Length: 432
Image (tube, rainbow, N blue to C red; front, side, top):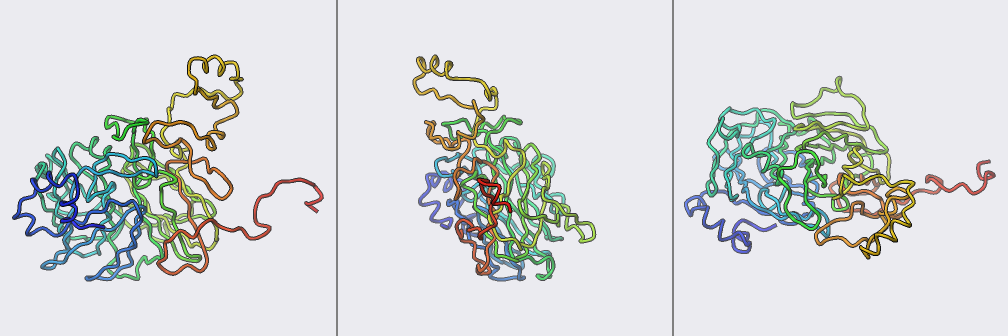
């Protein structure tokens, strides 16, 4: 992590930023730390104020703050960013403090928060604090509750966090463009009583979608539905962090959806309870068991389970095309169609033409096809037994015995105990 001063000195945006933030502003504003790495940062335990157990942001981090005259002060900088979506592909997006999504904001029920928002975009913006109950003039809807934040200016939002829960922030200015470019972030308000709703591991991420042509870097901002990159925190599998969990930990996963469609998020090996929405906590008597929870557009869901089953458990969106990377959606089905003659004819015109889809698409997971620069394969990522044949909104919950309490390092692939894995039937006598 680098601080704002280093960022201004080193970034190609330095000249723009220095010109837009006056010396008077710079002298009074809290630091605006910048993070450009996609590595998961360790949880940020509160250095002061009310205690709480912090969350972990997949491929992200929590924004530090300062306390001044009883206010908890944060500083967000809206700016162009470069996000590595997975090794081999970078996207030119807009975000906050060096990344898309922006850093997670954590605070405590009853905190008075002051959030400085500096705009280094080429157009105006605002921030809406989605789900937070606050004074109308702090709601961040450009033209309705405030004037837009012009490029180069800093606005201040002040309100008390009246209730704990799961929320997010995003622009309410040129919304279609700015969210299509990746402007969003997570807010977690912890209960005043740190023992209330306490879990051992608390993960957060945002669902987002992009339409980036193979070989290009910038999303099509006018796309309505036909996106080709479906992401957790603007990362696609295999670039998405695993959710590393200690056996018997109580786990919470908080998800917010800023795409234009719903996402049925499914976990293998467990059922979970829906415990929180952006409307508040779900009382225990009203919770119900699920293995899949549909996260509607513009909504947040938190689910919880006790991790009592060791293993590598898949965790993904159940819309199957959301677990694919950039692809054309207008491909005819060629299953069962003999292509040998076709391939020979086309091969005379296009020497690199490959036969695809005659027996399904699974063979593509093992192919090394020539791709344009800055383009990911449609299916990628390997496990201990070969290609996993997934991309997009897919990751793994890794439950292990013996981890330390706040250890999130990847423990490697699960080693199945003898007699607990599917096997090839070679002789019926094995069944006796």
